Image (cartoon, rainbow, N blue to C red; front, side, top):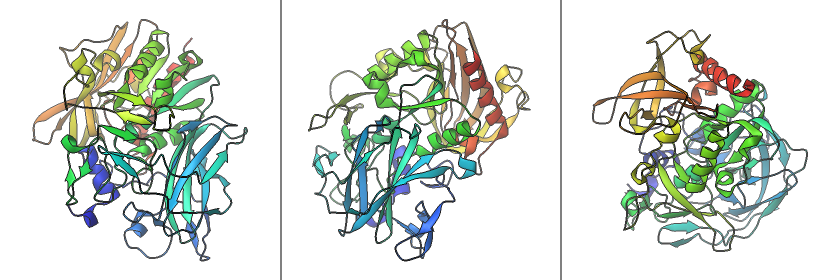
Amino acid sequence: MGTEQIRRWDSGALAHAVSDPFGQGPLPWLRGSDNYFDGTGQLVPWYADETLARGGAGGPRTADDMHGQIKGFASNGAVAPGEAIDFHVTVDPPQQFSVDIYRIGHYSGDGARKISTSPRIAGIVQPAPLAADRTVSCHHWWQSWRLQVPPHWKIGAYVAVLTTAGGYRSHIPFTVRDAHHADLLLVLPDVTWQAYNLYPEDGHSGASLYHAWDEDGRLLGEEEAAVTVSFDRPYAGAGLPLHVGHAYDFIRWAERYGYDLAYAETRDLHAGRIDPSRYRGLVFPGHDEYWSAPMRRAVELARDQGTSLVFLSANTMYWQVELGPSPSGAPDRLLTCRKRRGPGRPVLWREVDRPEQELLGIQYAGRVPEPHPLVVRNARHWLWESTGAGEGDEIPGLVAGEADRYYPRTPLPEHESRILLAHSPYRDGDGVTRHQETSLYRAPSGAWVFASGTFAWSPALDRPGHVDDRIQRATANLLDRICKQD
């Protein structure tokens, strides 16, 4: 595959080893109506339109990794109101740029709201990324701008939109968190996001835990990929992680209906910054495949102390990883997963006698090449109440991307009750019929643990073209029960 053929979504889908199950590319969820005049006097939307980036006329253009028109990363993934976050940005050719800060939310259907705009900033061409044993890092980039987060800013998921004077755009996601009590803590899967980050997608130097390039510009597989990846680098292409939209789908829906949310990232779990007793439930809204041992211990402790767990994707907690400091000593900036290479202990949780099913109730079964219906099971259960779903009803397209199921020979978690709420046949890449399942159990502590077993659950809450009112109602039934339990 030549370097000119490498595009962000193409390689991102390859890195995920599945086609995009929703067919919308990397930026469909940022759909706000906020418009403004750019440097040429043209009225443009705040988000970068991928169709324009592929040769359309007018409007903002998405920066790419081959030319690096504007790219950047944040010094911290999550900060509290009153704290500072530093942005490290490269601009080629050097020119002024600005940073617009947006908060993700419902906002009457816009999907985001502009919160702040930086002054004009002098952009420079930063040094080339450093690479050692496939690990790409930009920790040596100069600080470009420091954002002091005002104390009055709402906690939540934010996006910094970088725009050059010439109209090129890129994005940097970050989180504003707080330790206040809330009904639900939304945990954003930043560790998994970084595992799939192929920056720079320039055809010769980028690497993720899945892919790297050789000297001829061919995209190599896992055996030649990185073992360690750095958080000190931009996200590839448009600057947003693969499948970040699943989290945004949940956020828009949950904020629309007024759920009391707090926000954190998986590295907060790892570092012990989360006190589960402050929340009735922890919600994991998107693909969350890479877990460290401290992350798993924190979540198991939460469940055992009565905090419910909600997993709205599939292939959760599959690989065991380690987090380490950057060369400058900043904690948790390097992510290591050896996978099946070299001597030593295995790194699949199920291969170290700690299968995912012991926490989730189900575990990863395989990829789903084409979307299939989710088939309702145990329709009289309270989760399906008022959804209109009957036994055996099919919800189109709800089994997509990847799927989980119950493994009869694998230990289950301790439970007071347990039920499977979907049993859905699908065909894998070899044409073999397999099945997906959705699980719910109640732990002895009283905590509920729900696992959807499919990538498509969160998009069904608020993704245009994929919304299903039965899934919306079922999710509300679950969260309402968690939030109202004594």
